[in-house]
Amino acid sequence: MTVPILDLSRSFGEIKPEVFSALERIFNAQSFILGQEVKTFEAHCDSYLGVPEGSCVGCASGTDALLLALMSCDVHAGDEVITTPFTFFATSGTIARLGAVPVFADVDAETYNINIEEAMTKITPKTKIFLPVHLFGQMTPIEGVISEFHGRGILTVEDTAQAFGAVRFSDGGILRAGTLGDVGCYSFFPTKNLGGCGDGGMVLSRDPERAERLRRLRVHGSGTTYYHDEIGINSRLDAIQAAILDIKLKHLASWNEERRKIADYYKLLLKANDLHEFVSAPVELEGNNHIYHQYVVRVKSKRDELMNYLNAEGFAVRVYYPLPLHLQPCFKYLGYKAGDFPVSERLSREVLALPVFPGLKAEEQEALISAMRKFFRK
Ligand SMILES: *Cc1c(COP(=O)(O)O)cnc(C)c1O
Image (tube, rainbow, N blue to C red; front, side, top):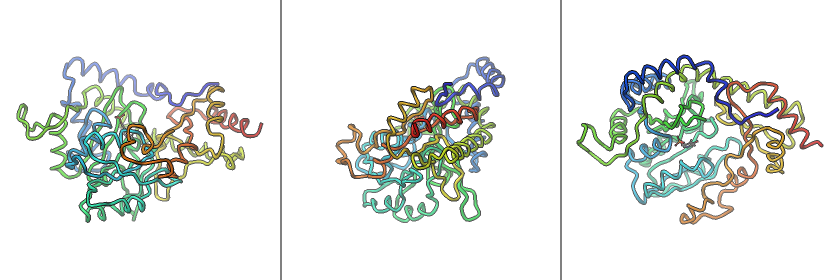
């Protein structure tokens, strides 16, 4: 048996006729950039995420979403942005692209998300932004600190690239990933929970003025065509991506629910196979509705041997992420060294992502876990 880390074709069948008719509509119209398809999708995102009309602004990628978000917060050279070293590169790459300084705080060992108390200790007079990541589909519980950051003149930008549709229940309310801070940043890279058929992204701001500014920034800072109020970038969502994402959005809740069921079954299988002394299942923080963009376990020892064994047996398992950002060669100038963020460093040696996607079969999960059992108990 071979089990891929992700097989998008298994969910594509459900939407294929609708996608092909949308493509025909777009090719008949021959209108490809922004336009009505993007407006419709943005409006549906506003209602899906429960934010005022006009809050969601499509753009070209999750990376651009972060860049646009930081630009809309006037982040300039020398400003400091507090963020996590245990994430995909783009989170910090965009900070550095603006000449700003990523200031790292270590993560929580159980959720892999930024340790908020440690983040608070990194505040300096130069801090402009707090940039948490909702990693692997689970929200960072930031609801209590946003106003505290505001009180110190610091805005919050959420990296929601892996968590479109993740929610958190707090004080009787429902909090949606990407809608709590000043700007939320989403990615529609094909492998994300809501993924297009190419690059795509979105920024969200509940502040209408900031949302308007984000709309200008994505078209070279121009409010009226050929008149430029400020210097922006070229970062537009295209009609084909928007139409396909709009179709997929209707399935997202059930697909995310399916990921949760797969996660529950992995947890059960790990327990039933007595693997908990070797492998620990991911922890869902109290109040969180984790949508398992990735199902990431921790392997206490021999992670790489296990990974190589499983890959050789036909089970695609992967490491996200093998080197924390503070130790990346390109960030050497920031002056960090090994040992600075022990939790992140330990996670990079212990984490292992197992396949999780709509359409993954119970037999496939069972076969993978028995291969794991064979490895540890041979
Ligand atoms: C995917 C991802 C991004 C970047 O999104 P792209 O659409 O690939 O540019 C940013 N941050 C995180 C945490 C991601 O997983």
